[in-house]
Image (tube, rainbow, N blue to C red):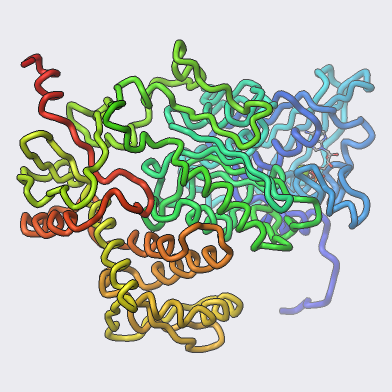
Length: 600
Ligand code: ADP
Ligand code: MG
C-alpha cells in the first residue's frame, strides 16, 4: 500500500474492467456481435465457434459495414453511431447504444475486423491484441462486417478459469444466437461449431415459422392481442409440455430479450392451475410497448427491464395469454359422443391457428393434405390426453365426455393397477379407463376447498413454527393488505418486519405444500382476480391452490388411497364447472379394443 494516490486508469485497463460486466463468457461476445450485425441492417449472419468460443468466435454479416475512417473508433469506449443525446435513449430501436461492447471484447482477446461499406472501394482490415491496435490495411472483401475474436481472456487468466467445459460454453453460445434468431425471423442465421453446421435458420416471413423451426415437434398455439396499448404476441406450447424452469420460454419487450420475474408470474397466472409449480410453457412471447414506457438501461447485459406501469403489462399478459389458455387451443377437449376423436385429428395439426383480428394470418393453418409441413423434424408432440406410454403411445385415445351428474360411479370400477407411475388403470363393463392420478387429486382438492369456502372458510393447519418469507418492502406491504382474504382461504399470515411476512398456518388440504410457493401463487391469483382478469374470482384462486396438491405424478399409490379417491370423485359433479378444463381421464371402450385386435 505504497502508492494509493488517485489516478485515472489507463484506457485498456478501464476496458478490461468494463469487460467484466459485458463479457462474461463466449456467449456474451456472440450476443454483442450478432446484435451489432442486426443493428447494421444485416439479413444474413454467420456465426462460427471453436473450442466453445474461447479459442475462436467469428461473426460475419452482410450489413452496412464500417467506413474506413471510423473503424478504429468503433473500438474506443463510448464510441457509438446509435445515439447522440440522452433523449435518444427513449426511442432507441437498435440493440446497442452504449458503445461498450467492441472495446470490452477487444481488451480481453485478439480481434481481427474485416469490413467494407458499399461506398468504400477497398475493404479495411484492422487488428487489435488485448485492446492495443495493431494496424489498418486494405483488403478485398464483400460489403459487410466480419469479426474474428480469438483467444478470449488470454490476458485475464482469472476469468479464463471460470470457463466451463467446452460443450457447456458451446451450448451457451448457441443459446445466445437462438434468443436473437427468435425475434428476427427475417434474418437468416447459421451456427457452426468445430466446423459442423448445427443450426441453419433460413429467413422466414412470420415469427411463428421461426418459433416452429426452433421448437421442432412442439404443438404450438398463437394468440395476438392488444390492450392498453400493449401488444402481446404469444406462441406457446401446451401446459402438458411445460418444462421445469423458464429456460425454454423466450420473452421479449420491443424486440429485446428480457428475463423478468413479473412477466413469468403473469404467464404462470394466465395458465392458472394447468401448470405444476415451477413449470413454464415452452415458446415465445413478444410484447410491444410504447417507447418511453419501459427502461432497458438497467444492466449492461440488458436482460432486465423496468416498466413504468407494471400492472398494465401484467394485465395485458394475463389476458392475452389467458385467453389462449382458456380456449385451450392445443387441447382436444372432451369431444361429444357423436364425434369420437379420430387418430388423425390433433396429431396431424401441430400448430393451431388462432388470432383475434384475422386480417393477415401469422401462420397459415396447416392443410390436411400436407400435415405439419412446416415442422422440420419427425417427432410429434404427444397428445394432451395420451401421455400414456406403451402401445397406445402415439395415438389419440377415443374419448367420451365424463359422465354427467352423480351417476358416474367411479367407486364401482375395478382398480387394476398403476401405469407409468402416473395413471390409475380402471375397468368396468364398458370401458378401460386411465385416470391421471395427479389431475384427479387436484380436482378432488379443488372441490373440497370449494365446499369449505362455501361453508364459511377453508380450514387450516398450524405450522409448528411460523415460516418466515423475506421480500421487498413493497411486496410485503401488498401481501399485508391481503391478510384477511388469505386467512379466509386457510393461509394465516402476519407482517413480521419491514421486509418480512410470517406464515402461521396453511390450508389443511395442502398441508404438505411449500408455504412460500403457496403464498406467492395465492397472492398472484388474488391480485389478478382483483384486477378482474379472470371471470370467476374464487374458482381461479382455488384452482391455483389445488395445484399444490401433494400427490404428484410418479408416486406409487396405495389401493386404499385409490378407493377413497374414487369415492370422492363420485361426489364431484363433472358436468359442472371444471377448474382448468384439463381432462382427468381417458376412456377407451372394450368394443374399440376388441375392434382393434380384430375380435369384431
Ligand atoms: P454499440 O453497439 O453500443 O453502438 P459497439 O461497441 O457494439 O457499441 O459498436 C460500436 C460501433 O461500431 C457501433 O455503434 C457501430 O457503428 C459499429 N459497428 C459494430 N459492429 C458493426 C457491424 N457488424 N456492422 C456495422 N457497424 C458495426
Ligand atoms: Mg453493440
